[in-house]
Image 1 (tube, one colour):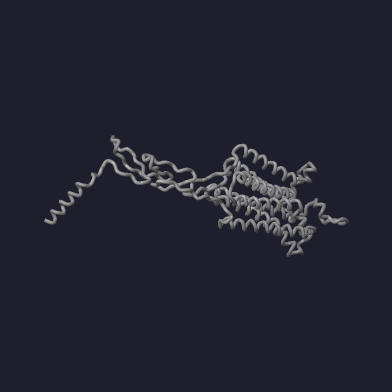
Image 2 (cartoon, helix red, strand yellow):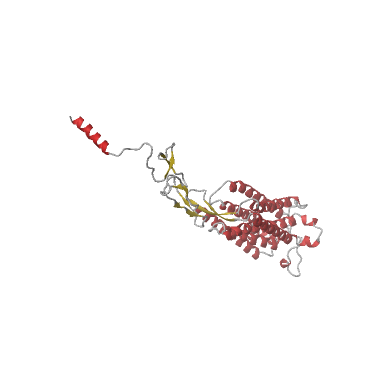
Length: 367
């Protein structure tokens, strides 16, 4: 009897409950309804994908989130993306800032040694004008590095690449003039004015080429500030300045300068003479620079995210350290710790026309 009573109670409860429709069901928030079959009242539910949301007033479609927002799958609303960009406070950026400070410190140290020992054969061997050009242009490259680790703006995006590659081109152009002088290639120049001022002409010519390339870049496809939304939940502010052909042409010009420096330091008529250490040092520095930028290209192209710009900063700093380590560290070591080598006999390849300010009146320099 008890079991029959329970069965009767269940039937009564089921009878009082509203019938359940097997044709239409209520969709959950974040789901859209789509028509099933030929009946207008029969729907099925489908989750809205990531990046879309379902608005209650429009139950039959999923709406895309605005560019600055995101949403997970089956969402009824969108959320604001977190804005990110490369900052000084990031660990890798802090390391790059420390390396930049170290590069500036080495420039200051080399400049101090040069000014203190400017009348010695080692510093005359380095040359006043090329040393000043290399130090100032390297300082400009270090200053441009800070434009890569700050909040990007449209003006910063248009300024940082020309400044970076322009300073690097000036540095390599000064090395090219020094390589031509040290290897004896300047004798092939028939014009006496060009033979005397070939270093300054090399710098002005390459600065003009860089300026022309920048103008063509700005006319063809100028850099701009981009809001990258490829990463989930993140709005990445970055400069779109690596597009073809502008960035590629500037990089190609710098790479060609390094190749030309390497060739001139090897192809001169005086390349086998013992005294021409400057050509050998420039050759070693430019080989390192070519290796650095050859490795930079595939790494830069295949990477993404806010730390991509650090690869370019690292390549620029590594090039500066290669130049100073190959060309100036040995001379500073001789000037500070090996004065017995700081003689005209040891530096047999002194420039034939040393700067006038280094000559003492009434004396004759040894050749």
